[in-house]
Image (tube, rainbow, N blue to C red):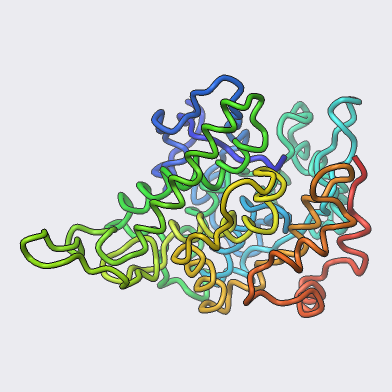
Length: 384
């Protein structure tokens, strides 16, 4: 699976920085799964801090390794794009396949078709072990931020990277005025993420990777409860006290007036709450509903306000579409012998993609612009 950290306390050796306020890192025991056999993610293994003497914020110094399959990578790509950091932080795309296997003892993480750092990296194992000779195969996940100068991985926690890219590189950003984590909305943003992260973003994996039906059932219930809460929140009057529906003696609630975003007064404002929710909602119908939920339960078509949030983020922000490739993501989750296979992935994409999302031929120019190999992705699909 694609690694992400679950709630955890910061380890003693971790330097403090702007991102330590992220809910995903400071922990919330209310949302840890309780059922026997529940899937619980390990914490992120590398937690260096940008903006310190060790890792100063400098344009051109860092490379972000990502994978189009991965929702955790996608959230970081979104912040990079919205802030206008394309020139400051280079991106290197991995392949869609793992190299080796843990069962055989030769696991090397994600393949790297073209290493743009000049170090000849062929797998994420090579990246993580650069200047960390004892690292081994501890955690070979993406996203990861690599320091060209020190030739070492700085951080592999997507929540931390989102907050760092939101503020620490403003001197090099084309859109430094955009603050996705404003101080006056942080409590609200963190409250939303405190349910979205465990029950939707990680929730789909808690269903798919559960070791018992009890754990899977618990995760499914939480998933749909949380989707219902977001659906309700996206109506004016459900996010802020000043927008609350009037009491019964003052008239009926104001229903049918949608919020545009998850946080902020009135129609709301774009924040990390939306950015962190988008990737897994975006992938839900094509991928998770089949792979993890086995087509049981509703798709997001049953949640029109949530679906409209996904559409709005994609269609209203020109920086967002280049960070998306739902077809590659669907191919990346395909596995021979499973419900989603390399043979039916194209049909799954065509049948379940969003109605406003481009067809496959219209996605090819973006792949070319990103410098992806001509045979990507089919040349990198793994046989399991």
